[in-house]
Image (cartoon, rainbow, N blue to C red; front, top):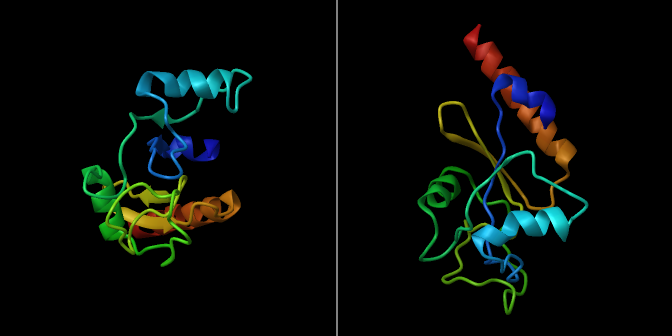
Amino acid sequence: MKPFRDVGFTILGFPCNQFGMQEPGKNNEILPALKYVRPGNGFVPNFQLFEKVDVNGVNEHALFTILKNACPPVGDSFGNPTNRLFWEPLKVNDIKWNFEKFLVGPDGRPVMRWFPRVNVSEVRADILKYFRQLVQKAD
């Protein structure tokens, strides 16, 4: 997403341990784990990484309540949630798995939402289309 930086586009990452307990580390362990373990090889994210939060359930961060209420769900099935999803109650608009994505416009309003396993080229194309619409509105 480097080409979008010049127009003020920023990626924000929020670690979460609600999906298969895949992020068990403490906040101060997450960046070193990325750098030295997985993916390792000195990896440093080129985006802002925040502290771990809950994105669903009774303890969900307010940001994710806003995002989920503004954008329709990307699917209505959780598959088999037993020993995979660690929050209650399950709601249709919940984030379904790690790496679900949201686009927030420059006015702070959520615009789009993508399924966790969406192809990055589709996300890129949608963002480009959105930027073009913004430019057309400004003209």
